[in-house]
Image 1 (tube, helix red, strand yellow):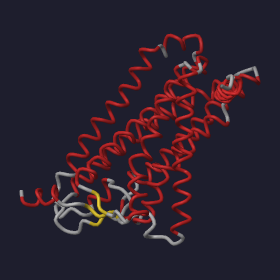
Image 2 (cartoon, one colour):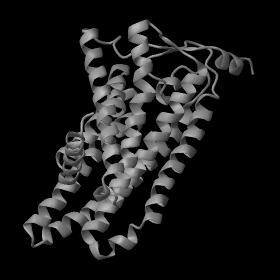
Image 3 (tube, helix red, strand yellow):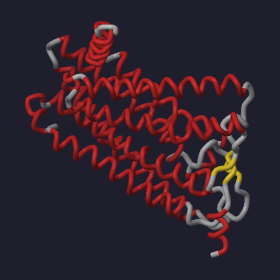
Image 4 (tube, rainbow, N blue to C red):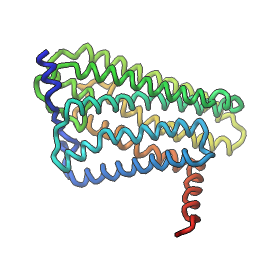
Amino acid sequence: MGDVNQSVTSDFILVGLFSHSGSHQLLFSLVAAMFTMGLLGNTILLFLIRMDSRLHTPMYFLLSQLSLFDVGFPLVTIPKMASHFLQGEVSISFGGCAAQIFFLTLMGVAEGILLALMSYDRYVAVCHPLQYPVLMRSQVCLLMVGSSWLAGVLNASIQTSITLHFPYCASRIVDHFFCEVPALLKLSCADTSSYELALSTSGVLILVLPLSLTAVSYGHVLGAVIRMRSEEARNKAFTTCSSHITVVGLFYGAAVFMYMVPGAYHSPPQDNVVSLFYSLVTPTLNPLIYSLRNREVQMALVKVLSRAELRPKR
């Protein structure tokens, strides 16, 4: 019990993102710029989907949830990292560490499931267009989003409670720029091998099942696109689906490295880079990927800007 009490009352020390690299000011400026761009891009995308009636479709409803996750990811990690760099705040409370683990796990699992469900949406749209209004009616969309959030909450609750139940009575220096389960388990003075095995097994299931659904969906989509006679319809389907496949590749590439590759095969600096990739770089790129290659989003943005210009000045 004494070990547990010590874990609860003591702070953790975050090593920080820039401890393994030089040119701190330049790297921090790049991170700050990407953080601002990501928040701005995802907020604009959420605003456009909310304001333009042409974007009130199942695909954009699911995309709005993705943007919501992409707003949350950097907000959980980057402000603390910035405080560390600007003010020297290297410590994080036990409660703050628990909050980071919970929300990052929640959003990570929920986004992985959501991306798989978005691939199903594209499968129905391309392969069964006449049944699309029925198969992707509003109740189904709400059920999809609700199930992704529920899976994220359940997984995050279990992982956070078990991870922080271990005694941390040795070094409290986390070789990472935020609290993440693999980095924290290295500090425990108890045997965590069984939990790490269970974590790896659940990680494989959480990653492989959505990836399998995505692969099957796009296998059918590819076959349907190849059979299309209209070049315009084929190009539109390719554009929409390739954007989603790019986002899936960015997200799952980082997730597979962190949770399916054994810890012995990657170092703390590599973990920092990959974690920065999925918590900042990917959320920043997602709105660009979907907007630059999406004519409907571009038209919605032009419409909003033209309205602002035509509004009479007082």
